[in-house]
Image (cartoon, helix red, strand yellow):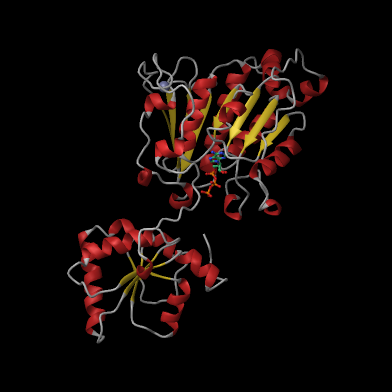
Length: 418
Ligand SMILES: Nc1ncnc2c1ncn2[C@@H]1O[C@H](COP(=O)(O)OP(=O)(O)OP(=O)(O)O)[C@@H](O)[C@H]1O
Ligand SMILES: [Zn+2]
């Protein structure tokens, strides 16, 4: 999709508030820290939110309500039903619609005076600078490491403050990069984390209100910067723990003179390939990995036949116990060992005992079938089990290709999908 130009001139030049502004914003206008001048600054501000998900939704609605001049909303994705518990600008009736468009509809309904620019596209190295350079402040409301580095570098190169948020499970973080002589993301994290250590909301879970809180704080910091109050979070980070109800505010290390992008002698002078740099995609969508040979995999239909024919086998479900409470394959003898536990000796003893027990009741060595949610962890688990059971070399260990998602698609349309 071609990048839409923002409609107004790149410099908004409102000199005063109209009567409608005065009525609409009266409650914040009478704050001495905002006042008429602050509100005019807000009216002239251009703010870009990247990501219209759990963080971007609350941020966008408060920035709209507060009366920013232009609000750009970037997201490549479409609304899904599993988004609605936290991505509160969307609606059941808008499942399938681009998130940027859906967010625009709600924000515009709240404040039609804001000039909205929805971008239904993936921000990447080819378009980031072109888009970001049109705005004054950028909010990182995305969910993947590659985009975090991209946004950081683009904001340093274009000299824009980056209000960064993140949330997972019951915890959240907030800071502002590249502002007020403070550090950038690379000053703090020069190297990306190994991809396998990064957990996303779809795997780790998140309580909707947690990104709600952090997204609101992102809006607050953006409003403060836009209104000329400055931010409390340059070189500082807020850590929120929703279980203990704790907000902690820690000092971060400052700008690093040897930072490759914002340091004194930068070695990165243009945007790079961030997926390659991070070894991970700029999305947190289901990635299908392929670790096993075809003969080590069963289709969900083949597994169904195995059940129907009552073929003896051991089914190991490698999801977390909480996930088994949601749904399970119709095998009453399922053994549950989360994939992370396969390395634990006592767990493996359990598996070996079950295998021996089952095998002592059968004439043949029964195969082990491994299942997980999407068919990725199950492959890793097959390899792990092969190592652990290397003394039992006549045993067949296979996984179910595509996991429970494939089961729901190909075998049982009534099976819950999460
Ligand atoms: N490079 C990018 N360009 C545009 N949008 C992006 C980019 N990276 C991430 N996003 C968007 O940022 C948002 C992050 O929000 P969030 O993690 O709450 O949503 P999600 O990906 O829909 O979550 P889930 O993991 O539940 O599917 C997503 O809507 C995603 O599409
Ligand atoms: Zn830096």
